[in-house]
Image (cartoon, rainbow over all chains, first blue to last red; front, side, top):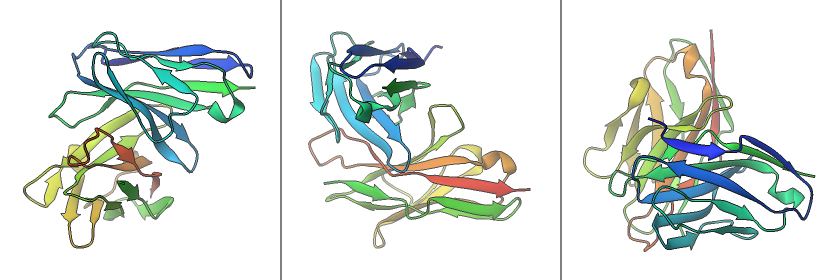
Length: 112
Length: 115
C-alpha cells in the first residue's frame, strides 16, 4: 500500500514564485488536510477537505489555496511564495468515523 | 476555539523507567483526543485515541494515555521506557460539536530516553 504520497520531497523557490505541492492517497479516504511544521510551533492546520468539492480553512490559510476535484488528490498551491512560507509541509488523510490520520512523508520547502 | 497545550519542550528519562508526556486541552464540548509520534525525517504516526468510554486508552508500542475530564488532561504514559522511544510526540484534539473537522495539534514534546 502506498498510503499518502507527497511530491516533491524537497523544493527551493524564489520569493514571488508559485508552485503546487502534490498529495495523493489510495485508501479512499474522505478527509484530507495540509499542515505546516515549524520549530516551536508544532503542526498548524492550513486547509482541509471532507470530500470531493468541499474545502475549508484551517488555522493558517493565508497565502495558500486548495481544491479537491477527486477523492484521491488534494494539492496545495502557493500563488506567490514568501520567505515566511519556508517550512515542512505534511499532508494527512483519514476515513471519516475512524478518526485516525495517516501522514505523508513531508515536503521540505525553502523560499529564498 | 479548540486548543491543546504541551507544557514541556523536552522530557528526559532513563531507560527502564516510567515515562509521562503531558497534554492539556481546551474545547467547548467533549473532545476527541489523540497522540502521534514523529521519528527523525519522517511523517507522524498514530499512537492512540480517546473518543468515548474507558478513560484509560491503550495504544501502539506499549503506550497508554488517561483521559481526565476534570483536569482537561490526556497524558501519555509508558511503564518502562526504551531508547527506541526517543522521538517527538504530539498531542491533538478535535471538537466533534464544533461544526468543523479540524484536528488541532500541540507544539510537541521531545522525548529522550537515556541508556
